[in-house]
Length: 395
Image (tube, rainbow, N blue to C red; front, top):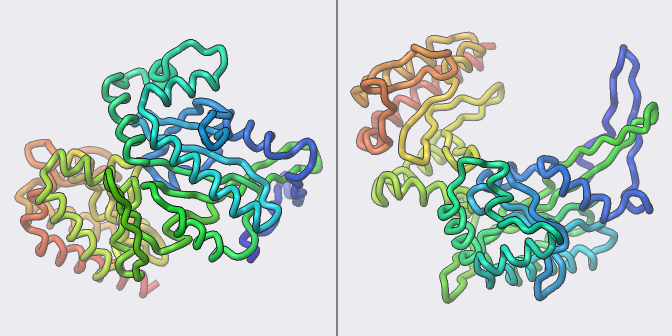
């Protein structure tokens, strides 16, 4: 099914239709895709797939493994590894082959430790004699070496990778692709399929690249991979069970939250999020893996009811601004004031309205205190949603 039409450019009132560039030519081929993805890592919509892998740094091309050479390797400041395989999807067999190939690469990496990974990456960089940490430090000067090494080592051990297949589009039976992943999935990975359409502006020969995510593992097949050091359990799930499964980014966030506030409170919060999702269609959205926002996506806008930071603090973003855009600013103000009342805090409007929030003695309040009054909080969210819905319905 065709997802997008051809883009146009409007300049001085004149409309120009862009020309689709074939990626099967001598000039625009797999090597060309690999080159622009390495030089411009922000081209890849990684944060749509796994927010925790965002901010990635290009480390090397053609990394040698037992199963062959990985086209692209990226690492971010938290030691999360993204690998990319650039392929032109000419036929079903090519699709199956590239999926098997990238899974084999991931299995190879999972056998490595930090020293092996660093050695092979630096070898692929040819004459670069810097340490891997020094490469990362150029982009993130405040990063601590010991923490970076421990994080990357842990991600290798757990097989926490983002696998991306980048090409000119995926055609044919997606179910076949899903079945292949089901038979071969044995790591704690996320697989993303990224299309990289390229268009040419006929007036000046400029190229315009419009990347988009076509699918990711959870969308392709409803499967949960449970990983331990010794065994892998793999089972099909129904839609309700899958909604409770977690991406790598979600797992990482809850691990950090558990460290900050304890396992019991972190587990109670997860149950609370599930209740909000099932009862009110509140969507939990991760921001770079450092915070989890509780959002309602209505027909007109997105309303944030809280953003939980990885250290357990509860922040708020833009509820007043969004209800003001809706036409009733007081809805957002009342929500924050009533939240302050039930947690025995203060409504704080000292900064820009986007950051109006709830604090106590000038500090954000910990999640544990919100969980202690979660039924009151849930009722307040429900009442506020009713007010928003009434305003939207009246428009």
